[in-house]
Length: 567
Ligand code: GLY
Image 1: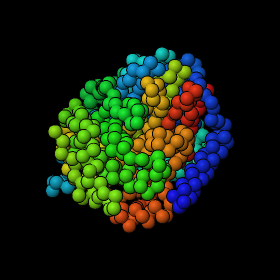
Image 2: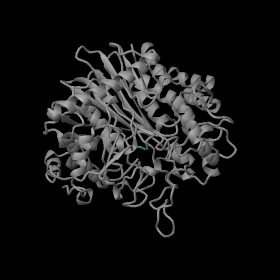
Image 3: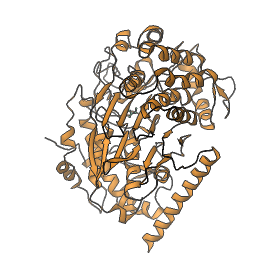
Image 4: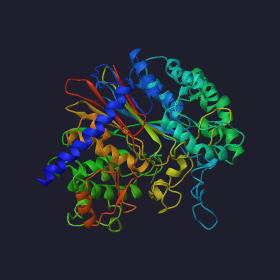
């Protein structure tokens, strides 16, 4: 009876939160459909509109993705970018799958100990807010490659909406105004003599943000494609910016940057097929490990966010993150044992030490014996077109506003993705993640990521497109969103809105959104030795579900300005 009451209370709280989200969407003129022709869910209304307009013009999901990526670079400066990188998971309407790795790379001048002082200690902040913090950006090349392989409309048409948004300006949201006010002092400090993103008075909701230099950079990208960024004026500006701050990215680094098509990794959960990003993302491997770890337990019977469900998920998470710390890195530099990590017998063996009566202390868990790192400010978008082609893209500058360093003249922010490498074995990065040799710095290597763009199939048909920002919490947010739909029968918006929790092996704690679980569950878990911390769960999940009648149902995270648009 108690269990049933708790379940009703929790369901009410989910329904209420969903209701508030629905009211907010209704106010913005956004409805829940049904939509059969296409859908875009991303971090800003302007970028969602840019993507939807492209779909309506006859563009496919990849065309829309290109428009969204560039529009986010303008309207979501915290994470949308041309100065960062990302990953795309693609599934065509006919069921072919592919992934594109446009993750940043270390400069050829990078070296294993570049963030250590003469005593061998990590120099605080050097991999975050300096010119040396940036990896060679991959986003522009990624979009060019994706468009070359799958695009239908003309490239220029896809970049133009972003140019218009940058040149004409757009009205900023309350959230962006708050972010710009908060980050202003750092922009001033790190960009002497530059005026980007600054204002004499406080930013207010509805202020117009105009980015003329960024508009010019985007015009070069529109007119010259890859060459508009990796050579010529913009490349010169990047290298000059580097020289002004002892950065190391060179013309050669830029010219030699290329994104890589990689075979998707796949797994199954209760008959659903999971199509995920392979390394250098840790996301796909970790997600598949997590799903297998919990598959045989009756979570549906226990209920959403009930103490047994939470305990099981947390125990799976600490084992998977322990593996991540040792085995995951750039496959072009380190032999990542993907098959061994995904071997069901191995994953089952990891769960054998799980004991219902007490928490397994993280100190007693080590990476498994078989035959890294990350920010809150990443961004994800999910797109499906009328032919069922689907794109899940997660892209990032790493930290919020990346390194906060804006390329003089070019008007875009550089990433601080180098912090996703392990600067020194065992020393945590900004997400508290630790790593070792697999993710050590090497010239030209890609840093490990947690980004987890994912596509789910049911009975051979597209079922869900999902992903989120949130640094190290990305993997667990995607995991819980999938479970929310498959195990707990939530619709797409509920599954995205539902409160989440997170555990990552080290530190030995469980982070919870406020009221994610009720007090009785907190007490039970605490009594078993779990250290529950309120807060520290990032993530803004943007996802699309294909319903049985073939219509698209969006889930846009109410924690941000995220917007779902369909037609
Ligand atoms: N920088 C965040 C990630 O790649 O996971």
